[in-house]
Length: 212
Image 1 (cartoon, rainbow, N blue to C red):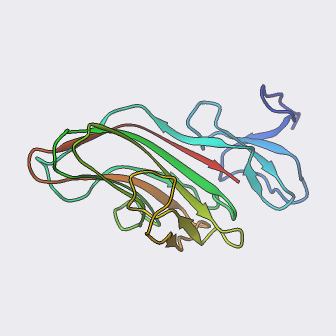
Image 2 (cartoon, rainbow, N blue to C red):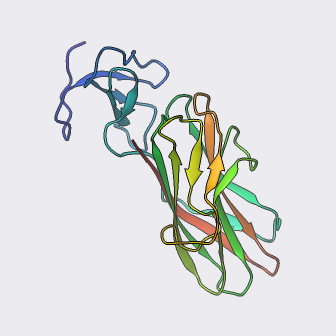
């Protein structure tokens, strides 16, 4: 296939393909491909070979939304899934970071509103919570959750102490760990939980970026 020039890249794109149909990265170190079905825009995302596997070409945005997702106490006080985001099999490698940034609004009262980000094998509420942010007596919050895979294996993940009000700083809590098999399909699940007393919260926007 002839090279296709892409604005913003210093090297030409060798192939345009889906993630499942991507060519082998073996023996083509430095080659760049565009994946059309992974990414938050029509251009998809760009991946570069290290001679063994395809890695994101810099930081790539794989999900983005600026649409309200409302979670109401009137429905249930149990945890509610706002959105489940599929990470295709093999997308996340060793030594990666996944950044989830969420903007939320909620009732300004003393009742707790809980926001969670889970990583697991299924599109449900059983994954490991890498963020458990509880807010009250305010009206707006922006949270970031950073999940890292270890340099030895993509199937071992670590994260900052989950139950914190800010994503950076220090905490008495231990790091979060998980062992999700990233060679298979997995899910990031954003969820919320509202206490009793006419409480609601809305996910106003979220983005998910990955990098190696």
